[in-house]
Length: 351
Image 1 (cartoon, one colour):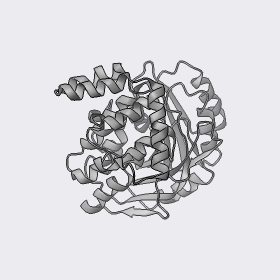
Image 2 (cartoon, helix red, strand yellow):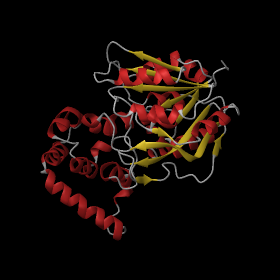
Image 3 (cartoon, helix red, strand yellow):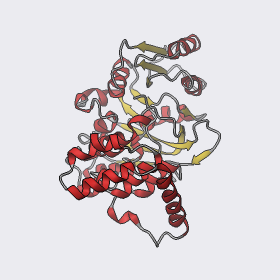
């Protein structure tokens, strides 16, 4: 067997209906230099049966089923621990590689970048409609050198996209030497590992979208509010040695404080009175703020959806009438999350 150059590391949970298509897209273009490592966080469906069948087709597919669910961060760490390739592609368990993706990424790994970021296009859940041609709006490949200025540019220009784990190809040795445990439970361990300290080698961003994302297929729907209002901002703002202005380009530090943001989440049905009582009330001291944010949590969904629809029309045809972006919270991206207008994908990995 040739020396392994690339390990495709997948953390999965209850994805029997989708992981076969993911594996088809990988195996159809894999070479002797590629292996697949799957860590199953104790699926209760027939994910194991599906994967075992693919093992008969591709001998470099390694499958480990855990006895108990440990968490997506731990599962990706376990997959990288088991990997033998020089690079690890942290692939999501329901998205696809486009034809030609593996040869391009394999070629890029030979140039010894510490990190390769692969762009993606976004489709609806059944892949019948293209929603966003390029999640990163780059027309050509970009290289970020290991300097402080480029390090800041990397976070500012790609940090938002990197909420999606399936675009990350990282040197296994780099992953191994970095601190990991403090990011367990964050849902975004890869972001912590990438940005916790300066990268020793250059970073390549591939502008061509080689990954196909299934939008709206995330498994953390019940935790959507917690993830996007607290965990994602918490991850970005834990990066203490980056300027605040850079971090604000990726996430507002406390988006949950803004009533407009909560109205958008209420319109989607992912902000409720329970969310308010669990996540917001303990953090507020102002009685007026508590009252306002509690009222939003109790608004009838139909009324909020009507408001949301009217706002979308106004923003589309009369963008100067209501400009909510001055608060530095990126409402247009939040809107995309909720109503799939040029959407930024919610994380598709197992939770």
